Amino acid sequence: MSADFHFSRQFAGLSGAAAVNFKALLDSVCWFMINMQTSKTSIRAYRLKSFLNAAFFDDQSPVPFDSQFIASEIGEAPEFVNRRLDRLFDANRVDAEQGWLFPGESLIESHRCCFIDNKVDYLATENRFQIRTPYPLIRLSGNYAQLLRDRSLHATLSQVCVELALWETNCLRGQEGMTATEIGRRINLKKSTLSTCIQSMCKGEQLEINAHPWDERKAVLRLNSSHPAYREKYQILKAGLSVPQTETLLRQA
Image 1 (cartoon, one colour):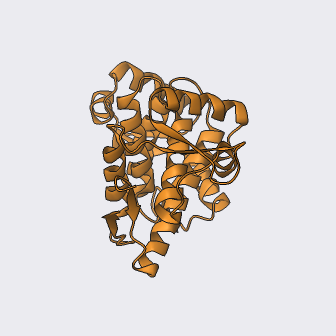
Image 2: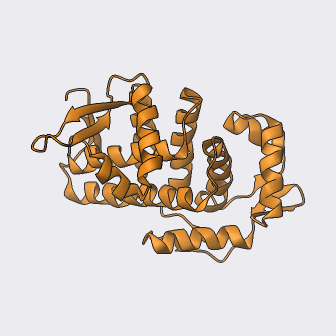
């Protein structure tokens, strides 16, 4: 297991903060996955939304109403950005004022509901954004989603959730992996959708399948540490969780 990366457990208080923040990250992504329309472009739509929402709720900042700028920031075509922005305007999710994009009331309420449902300790603010995340979890989820999208044409938001669940289990709980049933329960994903996702990930050699230590009827899934993107994924999580609020210490096991 020398290639595996782990969040350090040497300092209980800090590892506890890391666990809380990772749980908030995974729970929030799963909540939005369940509550958004799924399609083969859902990870692309999620990346755009997470870019906007990170500015709004992580940074308390509006976004320039410039599809060229947004497209360049997330590696998308301006036409795609324009189509998705039109949908967000139609749904009153974003507002445009004097060349800037701001969150609409329904978008603010969705994030409030997400954080309340998942017991995420967000901060209430008295500005236009009304909500501030406890740490930049939206940007972290968006960066992770973008890496998966850039690495695979078949990546989905479901895959983001599966991978984050496996990282959480391996890094913060010290377990070797999870069964498909455990993953489905953790991310609240239907069996059929999860099976399709796992099959695609196995085909892309992103997962390893190992025998269950005591139940031969089951298999244990874990991230493939020899996959070219494994270290990049780790570095994204390390950078996103190693913030002043948590001061998470990480090491290579």
